Image (cartoon, rainbow, N blue to C red; front, side):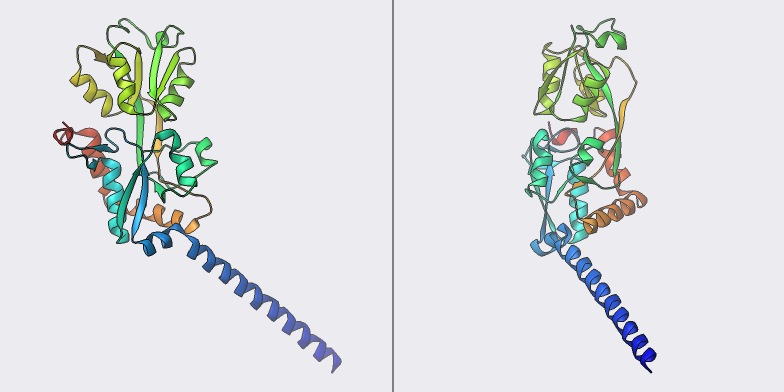
Length: 275
């Protein structure tokens, strides 16, 4: 009899521990779900998106309104969530600190996945892919080979904190690098003859050379620093990461992301909106 009592008591204690553990885990999962930025966005009724302006990812049209690939992506994401979208323009070198401090919910701004950035933020699956080309001052680089750009007598310009700046420093470590907060300023340095070259993602190099054929050239068709762009979000939010990844997968499959990318990166149909 005592053995039966002891067995029943042990069984009851085990069952109690299992039940308590299950309730604890379930409670923790619910707490995580409630703390997700997805729930915050739904309750607030709008999503705050951090962007940094550069053509054709995001830019101002003639009326001062935001347009571009990122704007289309963020608007579609908000529509699918049945919320509004609020864009928060930030300088590129301050965009990750602004996300971490809670100034917006997510970065959708052509941010390439890198190990260094990934130490501070989480990245979704890629929603776009890109690469860089050199845009050079034709007169200043006449007769240059690719190796000639790696010289202490050569000056590059780039947007501060961007992939272009990192790529230039890695590929041409001997060259001088001028860094600016705005993409337009980097090209202006090349146009003014104050920098030999800069780098940019298509269609930026081709369209700028077409507009300034006497001054600018693309010295090589080689594509550098092939990259994958992703949404960036704060760490510790598995529900948001799951939602963004699934949204990206669906919109790869249905062709939305490709169609909008092709519009902004392989055509100039949008140029009359900004000129």
